[in-house]
Image 1 (spheres, rainbow, N blue to C red):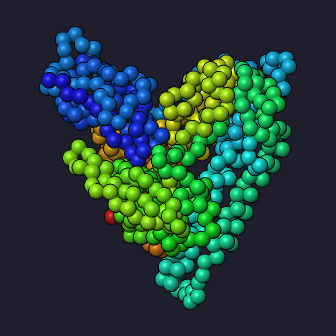
Image 2: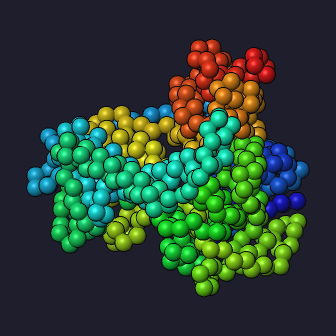
Image 3: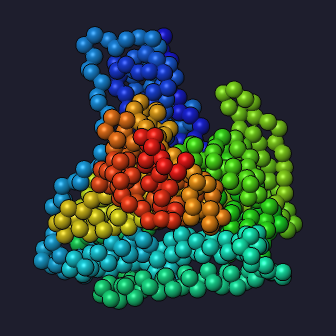
Length: 583
């Protein structure tokens, strides 16, 4: 009997996904709940489990195809054995192996091979982390470089209205919350404390200014020309900057991403805001609704919750932070709930309209296979933050007009050397596939510059950390336990709680734990996940270990200073073999 494999619900407002790859081929034996395909959306990459045991049937959706939620991907002949003569199952690539470096792309080296008449060797569109880093590395390698930026300041979304200002407010709000709730236990008593939000916002702006001016200094230091204006590709090797043509041998698209809109919800950046508006509020709202329990929503929700807002988070899925190890996510939600955030999981927002000084929001329970959708309820909030993800900023740049291939989600399609289908045109960062992370874009920028110079630029996508800058922080790298289970990998787990770490006790920050996953046979590190104080800094050691193919024992045998939070990493590595010392 043929059993259909369908696209599952994937998140708030997500209606389609891309078939990234098939993990099982027709005729191969499949166990129930074994991963058969990988799907990718802007918010998350997921594996699709087999609904029954049997033999893999036909693929009804090709790799790279866009499919709707509930669409039939393929079939499984339930209970059937692989047919005689069927091709044997392909061995899965060892998940613990780093991605091999691609061979260098044939490319001109610096200025020597630049065609006559070209004004620049490398022209980068966008000065975010991917763009400005690519420009600097290209200049270091001897290229004549220009960078196009439409903003009045360099640094892109990250430095201006993203990573940097959000971290400034996170830090300030943490200090404020600590002064009001945590200082007393240390013998520091503050009898009269008040919030100066204008000063807090001014500090954020000062931090942003220092960073953007820093990039401007680096451009001058490396003789990079800043072309101020909007860049549009009009032909191979040609970009118009506010109507003026500029030519270059290599053009790099590093335009970044924009906040993803929620259909039917109009933002005004005052009451119904994206992350941009949420960073610039001039008063603390009494109540805030966050739509989307991802990184941006939880970080900004935490900021305003610490400053006094009552924050409710609505998430389409039945869990927060999709893609994060589920054990970490569950513990993380408990911590945030204790901090005062409220969650409505498995719900969706269908309507939001400004009403006086607030916003009237209609929320419905998501109907699932086993549950019917509930009756809609209408609630009022002072501010609504739409934080359902980000989309590639590829529109309006002339890419489609010159024939650049885009995927169904508007991302630029590139090969392993970041080259598009148009000679001399490349793309990196949020505008191509992969996690939308500043450091991922930076690594791609460096790799591309080195490839253009004939070197072996390379990015190991299996060793890129992800961090959520709440308090405590969440940091992750490599495979999650959910992924290893779905892929049938035999693994070991080592965990160590911060409650048993001396430095964490002294800090009064004992929430969370370190979790390390290693191959059962070889002990090679497969993934690491941390919920706890300074998790973003602690993960660096495990990223390095993963990059160099280290084992859990390798990490465990490294001397870690005492008393430090990093001892929890060592203990978790020891726990992989059941020999943690301090618990």
